[in-house]
Image 1: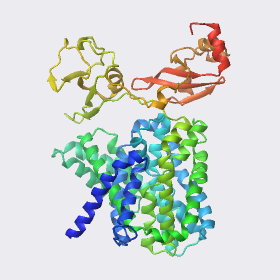
Image 2: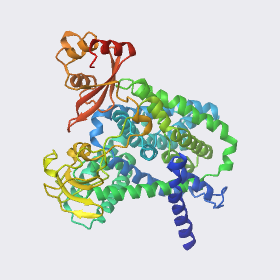
Image 3: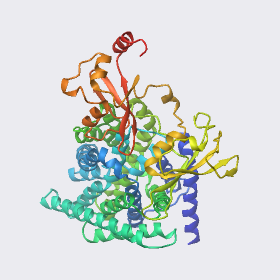
Image 4: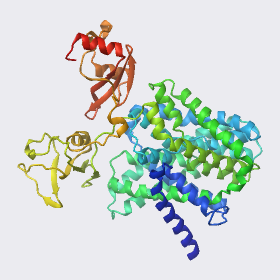
Length: 584
């Protein structure tokens, strides 16, 4: 027992310490955990022989459920109005299209039966939320809001479809079926119908329970986790998709008023990381690299086919009806990162004892390795080339909710003043802060000050501000400084000119020399964008109109009213505008 504890704790410690090299070397973090497991495995330096697929299946299913719960709790409902339709299209039809296209290629490349090829396509059909989140945050990428919301919701919600396809095909192959029947559609309706109902019911019940229980702070996250796993297991017993149910449970919990939510999220973050590290370590131990040599070339061909053909085809078909530029579509196609889920799903054929199970597992492992290495490492470059990166928005150094009551939406936000802030030297009474916000404390050279209206702000002051989440953008603009990356600092990201969102199209057309239809004369630039994007334009959205590119450069308020629009035009138009008004 002690030897087992030494090995497990040692591998976990090594993985966490090795993660510090991820940002320095540009290696995706999840790949570090996988490599540590492989080095400790049978063909590695550790020489540990581990082939217990049943243990991996049980522990891995639990880890995957916790990862999905955390992903659901961190998926924001406000992103739904701007990206729900395209992301759900990718999460459902996109996975299906990718699985079918990949299956056809795998059937030929690996000499499989067409149903086995389709099974491999289903196994590697979903993108990984943990991989997408950790890479976007770890590399400090700030993407256009519509693009990032689509990727986050898609990667967090596409696992249930891949899991359903995989489990169904494994059961069909295990029972000797060689063709599809109507039972496939009935099983789909049953799995997703029961999973969806149980997920919503479980989320609402847990919200009600947590808000009415008075517990020690550390017990709330455990109650949430235990309750969500109960929803997961009961849904499976009822014949539904437990993975869909636990994701929806997390989605409901994360977007409702919940007692002690910030502490719950912090604890969930740690549990999700533990699940990911443990899952990747087990999968790294389970794999035997020497066995992959025989299928290395065809498996690599499958991996490149998914990246260069299957994923782009699925993206182009699924988001064709939506407002994305060709560069944005290209970037979404590239961010088809595979992670723990495909390798975990590749365990299912092994547990079922299918004839080609080991080959499917090895092929899925190669696909994940190639995806993390190629797509993960090149993500910043891809964002730059596709023009989907925008300067970061100002944010506090730290923020936490003040859970005085369930209904309270007040937060504590911490800021540090730098030399570039105009408010330095001003008295607090002269600051134009949002209503119901207060500077509760000021730290100056390690001393705590009790601020009054006459207190003057100084350089490097640390401010503790109490306010509501809706006032966060205003407060951050007032007190926070944005560290814009060097490659964005000297670029006109939003265009050559910045226009007021309230300007009339008629006036803009007269100034820049283009005709505006009569019915659009009284329409504002902000209203024009709202009409183009169905009422929900967000920062970074762009339109090509009248031979020029118009981009949302700034929004204000809870409803995201467009206050600034960037305009990029060709050189001939710039010269014409300058000649008509030299002051322009």
